[in-house]
Image 1: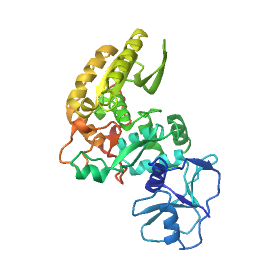
Image 2: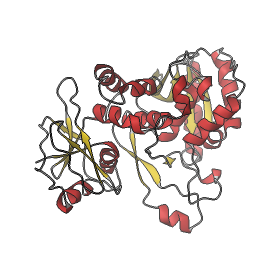
Image 3: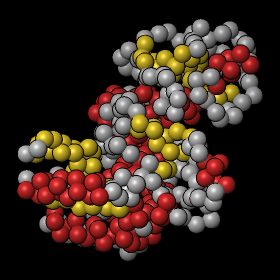
Image 4: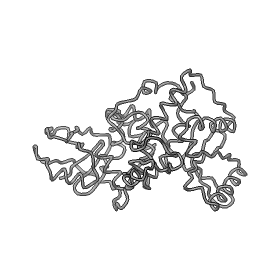
Length: 362
């Protein structure tokens, strides 16, 4: 009989598939939810779930809506809410399944802050997964800025369109409404969490601490004279490629020559290029300077009419770039673009949620 997981447990299992050394892949199957009778969930069932990557002390398991809900320590049971259409459950192996990616995202949104919904949306629709950092303890002992999690490469699990369509068609599922509000600012094909964060701060309106730079595309392809050129974040207004430049990947002479050649070619094609370093991204004041230059290129001035914009921006940056618990101070010189310390929590919507329905023009 299949055990169907959801919520944080499903997220951990999904991420485990991309962890270093993992050989699994996301596979879908149509199935009927079936569970062991009565209160028979015990060590064997828990072991099966943990073998699929669950690490949190409390497990989240889905029961059919007409099943009796057992009371078992460290297991949270959720009633299955049937979506419209046929559910494509995720097969984790070992007799463990999960809700479809779209159903999972909508359901977990009610447990996340607004910024966490954005980041998870970018992750599910992007080319990476957030996994435990295998070198965390060594980095702590060496006195480095240590992040508990890092990004591992993984093909996208869904698209913004699929997530949006599911939420629109299943408003009876808790979380659908707030999922739709977050998905307005999510884009497909992010290559790293840092690029996703850069897109978030450029896309969010001023009232949420962002820079309201208009529609954008991640990993956008431009047909150049020497082949296709990729843009980290392509802004439609002004035809601008915003590149995230990590010191690790752009420090060599060969890399700098290639970057220069690529920039010149894009400029010749009418695409302006703005480079953002990891230091600039993590420092809101430095990032503001870069946005002033971007605004001039776009011909779309930054026009902020919010008295407490800096406070809102600080709140946004604190949510996107939390300090790693093992570090007393951020070491900007050793920060990699794949580093992150984000993990969905049990918090409800953040303070900005009440303004989500407002017009972006402000």
